[in-house]
Length: 454
Image (tube, rainbow, N blue to C red):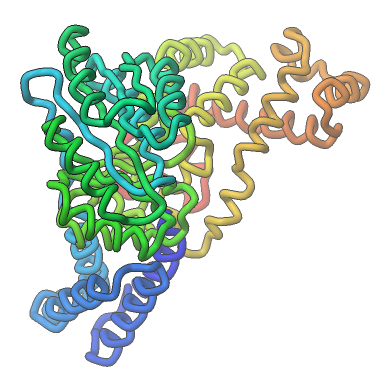
């Protein structure tokens, strides 16, 4: 997400960073680049005008002119204004009420409401230890009811049955009763969507809202919908007391203008972003971290949180003990590492959160770190015998031929994996003998980055 906008804003920032003095001319040129970047990213015109004007007012003031590093001061202003437009800070869901707390999801058809309902349920069950019930009031699309029932079972949530012959308000009343009797903490209501805004749809959603009395009313919006999403957000915010926004399909959106526009148009915070099809692909939205990612500064905090949540601590401790005892890093260990990376969305998702210097092609790095490549590597390891995985050096030419045939790949793929294992094994040995400092000393630059404390 934000790939195009990020690239353009980084270029704009790079053009002024390091300048000892900023003139009215180069400030004007930078703001023109910022304006073009926002417009190309499908940010609504009124939002672009407000954003650029706020930067201009601060840039021509004492804040930049009296700074010892005016170029960096201007980049800081752009970052601060991005945080402001994205919502200042993360706003968690308000679940402090007598259960069941109702969370209502509204939006256009195809925005991803049903999938988001399941993702949100999973997050509340696993992170907040809540007992969650799901119910669909989409009587216009029978498949939606069945889909939600299937997803509820998958994420471990309760499900209140409904059918197309019922009225949505009747379903809500029954679901509330069932949720109380089941001692559910949260009831998530998945409403019907339409391909376009119409009076009947809005009247139905408003009626459901009045019966459900939700504490949270979330507007689900497709990140790739462009200006249509902004128009829909405007209508929904006028009809319903929205409390937040969930951006879906963010992993397929290179522009990201919807995030900036919808937040400004509705005045409501972005709570979550959907970054994939899996039920765990829902990230909490942090405006300050997202602003840093847009400007190429990375989002290391989110990456650390993901690693803590995804990495199996017992396996990590077992590997650390094994390396300390002098036993090698074998292919069983490599397979574990690959699987855990895939659980975090692959190396591509991790690279999005790392600060990558401007002279490195981030897109090329992501291509090399795609999920398909990782699946191939796991397939190669699965084609080996336990002995070969434990002692990779025993894999000779004939064994490579058998392994390649077993996984349906080429001998070159086997060689590539073995080379990668050798490199990782060397790195692990350095870490076990001299810690992180020793490993970083061998990297370009000759030492750890500023502020690093292993």
